[in-house]
Amino acid sequence: MNWILLYWRIQSFLPGCFRGRLIAPAYASNPHVKKHCKINTSSMFTFALLSLFAMNVYSAEIVNTSVQEDSQTECIVPEDQTWLISTRHLPTCGHLSFYADRMKFYRLEHGCWQSSDLETFLATEDPLLETWYAVHGNWMTQSSAISFGRLIHSMAKCRCGEGKGIRTVIWSWPADKSQARLRPDIQDKACKSDAQGYYMGWLIAQTQPQLPNHLVGYSLGARSICSALHLLEGGSYRGWVLDQPSEHLPPAKTLLIAAAMESCWLYPHGRFGMALNGVEKMVITKNTQDPVLRWYPLLEKGRSPEAMGYVGVGGLWSRPEVQQINVTNQVGKNHDWADYLRRSSILSTFCRLCCDSTCH
Image (cartoon, rainbow, N blue to C red; front, side, top):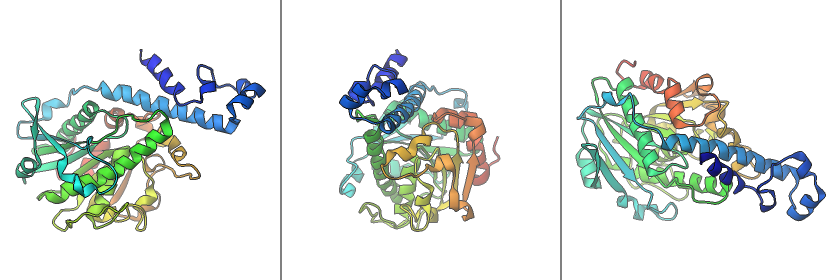
């Protein structure tokens, strides 16, 4: 059944006259096709690339939604906290400050998610608990977002939090597939991920952590984190500015996995140029075989940017707080978040660079 759905998904990205047919040079050169479809070979090549992009994203989606909590769960202790914060119902454009206090809060208690609120979330801050924010990527439902966050929690606890309690905040944003065509859908999610930066920055500004926040973002979630850091440092983006300064916050420890954004955005005059001012350490993965990030330049017409998770940090090497991890050999041709976490030593390296505890 999954292959049938995948076939339908790919066909939906192609022009009507190509649906149900293999894209072959002989077919593309048919005069009748060129006359009635009005599409040239280069355009068809773009559709082929987008179809490959869809296959990789969709295959990752199938795997992600089936991930189960497994061998790491024994490291979780009762003192830990796990929160789910949902912004799936909130707008992602306009005056976001009107809606920031309408996030939905849930706390995991005795294996069940219990509805909560902002006041309780702030009141349960514990100076002895390290706070980890887990921000997922595109085409993930709330259930798969929870799986992602719980895996981050258990692996961080086992590899980085020995002898420490962890407070995990799973950030669930509107990343369900919403458009019939691939490019408009991804572009829409990219804009929505920017808006998550405002909501996340607003929430973090309300907190009073004694320990640095650990921010883990995957794919477009990495973009959300950089947006939040930029705004927390007094920056502005798309007219959004946070009212509260962040002087009281200790520098964050940040892990960007398969980041779907451009490295130049973190340059001093880039889109999120103030983000690095608010970090103690930023660890960024690089995978030159990632089959999804490979086609990142196709998202915008007339531009050819490369994704930071694909080509690396570029000119950011000179920044002492930036550390790159090349996971090409471990992860290879894969964009699945579970494989990024399980096949590589990302979290162990992150802990070794950022945490006080000894990593496994």
